[in-house]
Image (tube, rainbow, N blue to C red):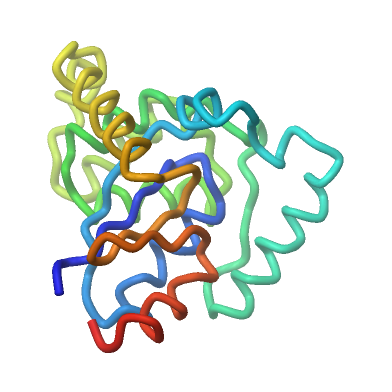
Length: 188
């Protein structure tokens, strides 16, 4: 079997839940692949539950799942859903699972605003990346193009939201599908 790929966007609390527990559930560290959820929303023609009357119920469900999964309590960033474009570009630049985990925790454990570049610099420095290079990297046309390309490729493969786990050509959408992926495909 090929290594699983977990598509995520840092603005998604469900992607946070999946990224935090994927290795434990799957028994192998998946490749974390950033996509722009806003672009996927545009392509599919509708957006996030966070912008609907279901927001409070969705937040309660995320908090419940975090407890059930043994994760720290969720602390919502003050402006959630945050503008995570620079953060997503930073993920492409960093190409580091530790950076992704750190930024997710900054958002959903510490309740920090991922739209603030200072938060991203702090996480970069904490995982051994050059925080001074981060701002130039997120403005780099090559980084921008790479994120667009990954998002377009994910869409072409059938990714319609995050988190989506891809294993051997099969897609599993939702953090609650990690167990199904292991059951349906055998031991990874």
